[in-house]
Amino acid sequence: MKIAVCPGSFDPVTLGHMDIINRASKLFDKVIVLVMVNSAKKYSFSVEERVELLQKVIKDLPNVTVDSSEGLLADYLKEKEASAIVKGLRAVTDFEYEFQMALANKKLYPEAETVFLVTKSENMYLSSSIVKEIASYGGEITDFVPEPILGTIKERLVKEK
Ligand code: PNS
Image (cartoon, rainbow, N blue to C red; front, side, top):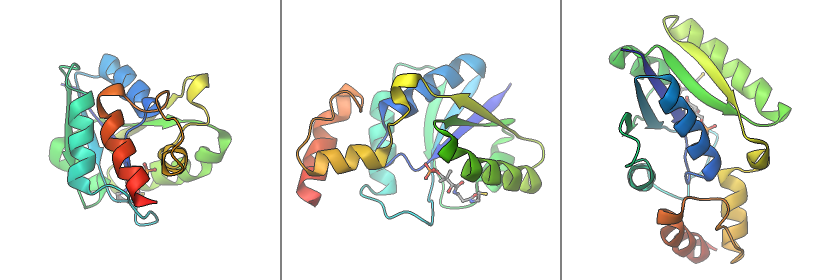
């Protein structure tokens, strides 16, 4: 069985993430969406909240599950015997950082390959940070996040301002 892990902050999950998760679910037998900690980021949602939001939006994808880890991705891959890390690539600005992480993960756990899926053109500019910025000013984020979690996200981010 080919297991892929889609790691990320998902603070919160966007339609860009959903596109990548959907496409990964067609390429692998099992996909684990893994909520992790990026030490360079300050989060708006706790790990538990990010997991909960993801669970609501992946429930129609039978081979996709959600998990969280506060450790190294390489250790998680090893524990699950995963064969791939799936990440979305937007603009060239993503590339250097993603390339560095892919090389580090390969060194730490050579059994897994990093697979980059090129984002749909309409999601090129989309990120959790952009969603948070727009929502914090009361702007419309309907086109950026999955419908079932729109209310929760709006409520939280407006309050945060
Ligand atoms: O959505 P993000 O913030 O770009 O995701 C980055 C993330 C969380 C996948 C990355 O920071 C990560 O893998 N963190 C876990 C710790 C780890 O393994 N770091 C080394 C990667 S080289």
